[in-house]
Length: 318
Image (spheres, helix red, strand yellow):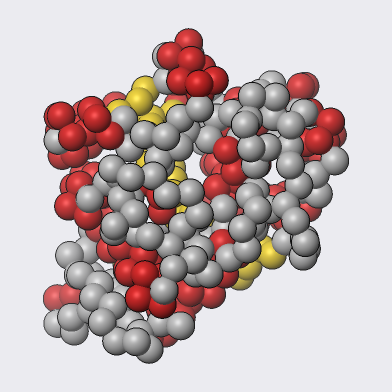
């Protein structure tokens, strides 16, 4: 990263940070390490951020992630880490107006982050930047991986959720979701998005219309409303961000991701950001640094800064 001049330092952004070391939504070890890598980047790089650190949520160790193919399977899931994350985020909303960064873990943690967001902002808007829709149900999921189900869980009526998720109080509406960058969907998800008329700009649409034009249209839709942005690393092209578990070719280029982030940085009601699915155990050290650098550049752009992260040194982070 280039050195900050005086004007850069005067624009330091203050935000709260919660580390979510949850990786039980899929079978690969590594996503739980994301918060440690972010903290190390803060220590060793001149990121223009003031961080109010809210600590970590860490799941109990699991040898293998549970497969969820039914409501009964979901009801047997140990949800204590998800509930802890949910409660910490609700406490943050109650006591601070700082935007909240939830970093690390797999995308199943949206049960906590997005669950708390819609509890605080029942009519809030969600921009979901991802290669995948993550809206399978336990019965429709080909893999049984929980990180492909958080939106369907949050969209289900509270009365239909198992007892271990009774702490989720609100229900997400299809009209609150805006997808960006989808390109790897299961048949059920394609039909469900169509039937529910969920707003979706897939990669084909973004390439045809341009990321800036799409972002401006989305901005007009969300303007003036509380906004939560969820960025899955695999929403970016794997050439840009290879250290993630479910790569999908043809994703967002850095210029496209930064165009999106630049427009959303103008949203005064941006309340929270998730950055998920960084897996430091996948790829070479260089690929891990490259992936984290891409995520941080998007984050900084969302916060309205212009600095560029350049991970050239071997010891830049971990």
